[in-house]
Length: 301
Image (cartoon, rainbow, N blue to C red; front, side):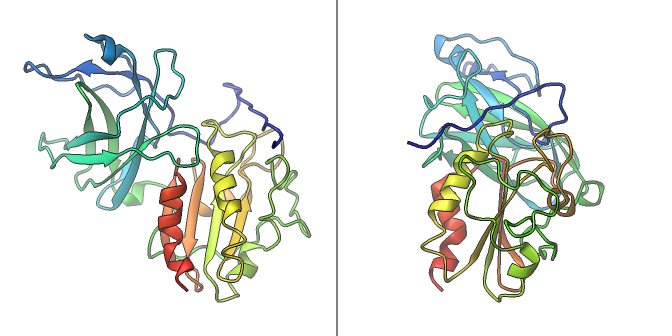
C-alpha cells in the first residue's frame, strides 16, 4: 500500500488555486421559483434532497471571452466535504450579462480513478461581463456567477494552437534549485527529462504541473498517479514530465515553470505535439477518461 500523502492547508499562506470551492446550497426548482445568482454565499433550501448537496465551483471566477472553456463543477455534502453521492448527469444553462440564455447542456459525471466526481461543463462565452450558470441537479437547482473578460486582460496560459515555452524544468540531474522537485510519496519518475530537452525530441510532450503535498483541492496527487500509470505504455511515443508548483516546501514562492506558463491554479495538464504545439489542456481536475481522451492520438502513433 502506498504511503499516504501529506495534506497541508494554511489559510494564511499564498495559495495558487484561486478557483476556490465556494459552497452554494441547492434550491428546489419548479413551481416558477428560480434560483438567486450567487458566487460565494449560501441560498436557502426547501427540500431534504436540496439540503444534502452544495455546489463546488472548481474553476477560476474570471474566464476569457470568445474561447472554448472547460468549467468543472463538483458537489459537497452538508458538511462541505466533496461527495460522490451525485446523479449521473446535470444540466447547465449559461445566461449572458444581457440576459440571453444559451442552450442547456447536459453534462455527464466523471470520476474514474480519482476520489471525487465532477462534471466538466464546456461552453464558449462571447460577451464580456458577469455570466450566470444555472445548474439543475435532479429536482434541485442552483446557480453561480463568473466574470468573463477580454482575453488580453487575463494572464495568457498556452492553449490549443499555442506553443509550449522551451524552458528548463527540474530533473533529478539538475534540480534548478527546486527542493523538492517532487512532493509525491515516493517521488514520481517523471523528472528525468527537462521540458526544453523534450521539445527537441520530435515526440509529443505531456506536461503536468501539480503539487501532491500542497494541492488545495487534494486532486494533484491522484491525477499525477493517473499519468504515472500511463508512462510505460507511452514510453516510446511521448515524453511525460511532472513539474512542481512551488520552489520549496514552504509553498510560498511559485516555480519558474509556473510563472513561465502564466498559471494561477493547479493542476494543469498540457498535451503537445513534437513541435511544441499544444493540442489539449486539462485544468483544475480531470479523471482517467478525460486523460485518455487527451492522449488518444499519442497511443495511435
